[in-house]
Amino acid sequence: MENQIRTWLSDIKQAIDEINLFMPEKRDFFEFRNDLKTRRAIERNVEIIGEAVSRILKVDPNIQIKNSRKIVDTRNRIIH
Image 1: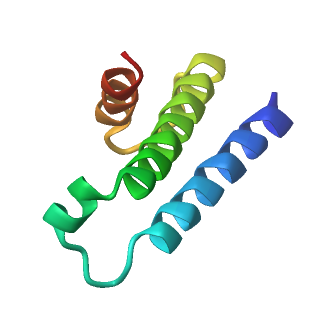
Image 2: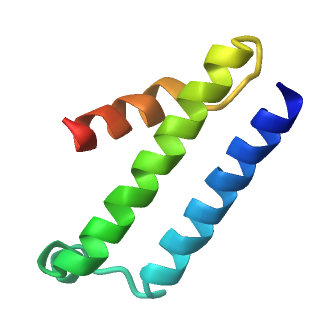
């Protein structure tokens, strides 16, 4: 179980790093909204983060993850 949690934490870190890579320092919502490739890449990484958080909490509900409910809810909205 501990190895699984580490893997999911690594997935979260990688997704965050990719989001930071895809988004330039100057973050303009209107440019982002009109850039389909970037939007889809960000959405996919948010899905990965939400899924990893969900799995971590299923394995160990005592782990404290700040805003975990919002993260999982955001993932669910993107997917559905």
